[in-house]
Image (tube, rainbow, N blue to C red; front, side, top):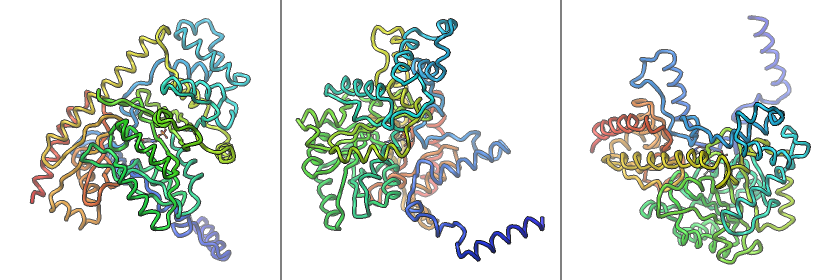
Length: 500
Ligand SMILES: Cc1ncc(COP(=O)(O)O)c(CN[C@@H]2CONC2=O)c1O
């Protein structure tokens, strides 16, 4: 009413009198304005609005549900968590359960045993207390043992920093490495936009290196060299190189030879190698396997003194897909003690990561072994999920390649396909006249016709003049045929509407 109006007016007058403009886009940090994150960008917001419309009047749109294929969020699309992991987590969350006789009827004995082992690594078994800023030492040692078993090379718990997913670990490294826009970070194009967003937020420069779509998204070292020289000629000091393997959004698994060249390039150019390996358990092709960059570096004879290397892992992907639990780590090797101390200081500002995520990261890196009571059932769940992901990747890849105007590289790993759109000139013209990127225009039209949410390639970066989109391979298998037929119908109509 009038009183509220008067009070609001008085408040405005008082701030104006104080000379401080109210907070606005002109007053907030310009680095925040510059930052973008397309995985949950414009198209997704539009999809959420359509979803609300559907809830209000179900017959208002030419489809009855929104299918979110924009984000690698398996459990939001029906994937079930791994039983053993949840058994151990729930026991650690409520240790009193371990004193009840009924528990033995509900939980497997090896999960009970594992919960005791974990709780014994936590001072006072207090899973609700702040932990060490790098994470609980005993869990970090477990993770180091898992890394050593995976790679065949030593790993130390002192080099592990447990984080709330891999994202905050990436931000921490960008915060450490970037002091001004004169500091550059070599990033793959297409890239996962956490990197471009974090570099923007920290005021650095993204130095692109283009993955080669013709060779299945391999990266050529002379491309790295060319981009590095160009950056240096502009006065940029390149501090690090980001490698995402398996790749997001491109889904390739780097060939071992390619990885060796990347490690040698970083060694020779004095770059920190930032190895994003969150999809290390998502490999769908027989002719490729995951090699960590740590293993590649050590097998080339490089020790800590030769190469600063940071390896990122997460509980959000793989066959576990525990995105909401926020678990992960970075393994830091090859930094001087003084710099290590600065990284520790950064971690200490956030006190510690959440303890459930820490426990889950230690479980992911040390799952049940042959002979454990849960081993067989665990392997059935694990292999069931991974083989289903492989089938879905193949089905979508074949569907896209069957369409005129789309070519799609194989999804060797990760959780995405990144098809190339060969759009008619007319469609490109209409999109640009509407002020949107052609692939964003296509994605919007697809959403409005089918309810399917994809992310335009422009949200990941691409060779100028090429257009792509990213689609996850995550919708449950029983939904795949419907998605494919709805997509095909839309695409054929779209190509007819705009054929040159
Ligand atoms: C390559 C890569 N690195 C790091 C992350 C961060 O993961 P967490 O912080 O959960 O550990 C993701 C998440 N993938 C995003 C989220 O879903 N779809 C994507 O492209 C990713 O794809």
